[in-house]
Image 1 (cartoon, rainbow, N blue to C red):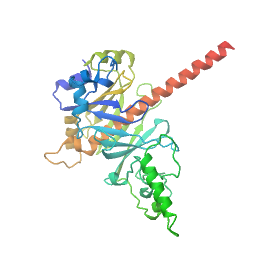
Image 2: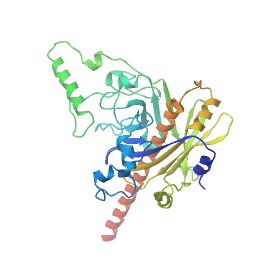
Image 3: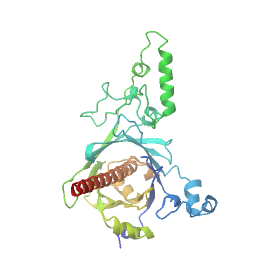
Image 4: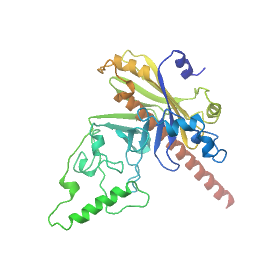
Length: 350
């Protein structure tokens, strides 16, 4: 019996999420409580018609009963001049949802900086980036300040495929119109209104060179220590779980926490999927997070929903950091392995 199944026997209240790619080849991620049969392992497009699929409950659940309150969405802007622009975690099942936080990644996945501010929905432009006039510092630097937010100026040119095509046209049209008025300054510079994050949380790769805890990442919130780490303990709830356990033993994750009473608690688990359109499944134990908050310094309303708290959003954001980072690491290792094989083949043939 897996650890997840043992915790389930204790009748903890939990939420289950399916983590899907929105489209192939793009970095957007949809996190929903409902399964999408068209993105599950083993699905074949030509096997069933759309009319036949519409009669299946799995198809109807994701296409006609979307839960915008308990769904999340990761929006990744595409800007060619920035190697890895910040992502935004949004509440809802589309990129139009209300932004929750900004997710910044560092080089080589050594850390992630997650920034929260109540002004986020007002400073994010249609590209999914912070407006230039709302950058925290005039020089747009974030050095030695975790709360500093970077701004992104709209260029006069745009590469094909970049995010925010219509917004780019509107901004440049306003600029051209402003050129006819002598002495008028750049609109983005004239209305400089800096905004900083009211809270920033670091998810740090604590032991990258350890043989036992290579994938361990840690973060702290409200005096509670959380840490993500690898696990091969996979619950066998679907037929594909057996193959996930056998073929991907190093792809699964679990979230643990150390309470203020120094108790080690099982908070959540992520199981990777074999499907190219599905990252995997994520379980979060709502009742465990609620117990942790009640022990901490957080002040809670008697009838609060734990899924609407910042710590829950933080757990979801760090889960996405881990899923994205671990996937990028695997792709990098595969690329290096392919290059080495090709190099060995060229050397051998010569």
